[in-house]
Image 1 (tube, one colour):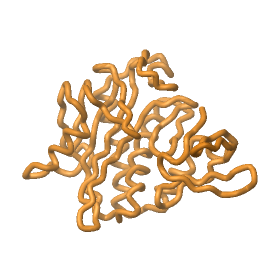
Image 2: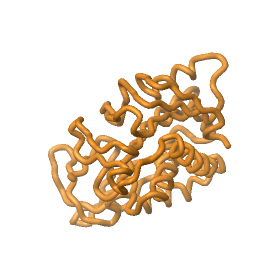
Image 3: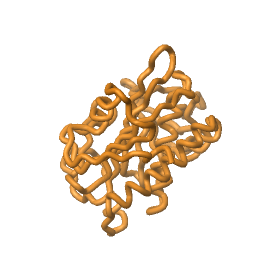
Image 4: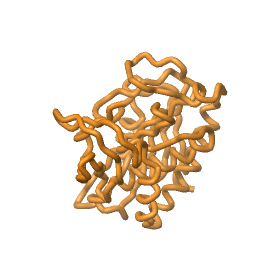
Length: 247
C-alpha cells in the first residue's frame, strides 16, 4: 500500500493541505502516501479560493502527500483525475448516480458530495510533490455556508457512517487508482474520467464571461480543459474558471 502507508490524525487543524505543505518543508520529508486527516478544519480550503464547510466530526477531511514525478507538468491534471476516480469508486459503493463534475467535484444527482483540491509543486521542470486535499460529506445534514447544492451520504441513505471506517475504505480505493497512475496508464484514466463526467452528452446552460449558451459536454482534453459543443455544432474548449455551470 502506498496511499495510507502512514496516517496522521490531528483533531483540530487550520487546513490539512496547509499542514501537509509544512511537512514537505521538513527534513526528512514524509513518506509517499502519508495521509493527514482531522475532525475539524478552522480554515478548510476549496477550489477558486472558496472555503470548505464541514461540521466537526461529521465528515472526511484529509490530505495525501504524493511524489508523482513520472507525470510531466503539462499532464498534471491526470493527478486530479486519478484522485477523483478513487473518490468516485468509494461513493459508488454506497449510492447510485455518482458523477464527476469537471474540474474536480463529485456529484450525486445534481448535488455536491465531495471536492478535491490538488496543489502541485514544480521544480526544475518536474513535479516534485503533490498534495491532494479531499472533503467528503458523510453525516452532515445541515449546511449554512450558502453553498447551493451540498449533500451527504446520510442525507442520501438515512444511514450514519463511521468516519474512520470510511476513511480506510476511501484510502483503499485511492491507492488502487494511484497505482494505475504509477503504471503510466494515463489513457485509461482519462478515458474513464471522461466517461463519468457530470452532464456528459446532455444539453444544459453554461456561462462563459458575459455569454450564456446551451452546450453539451463532450470530453476533457489531456491537459485538463473541458470540451463543450454548442447548438451550432462548434466545439469550444475551456480552462478552469473560464466556464460556469448553470444549475
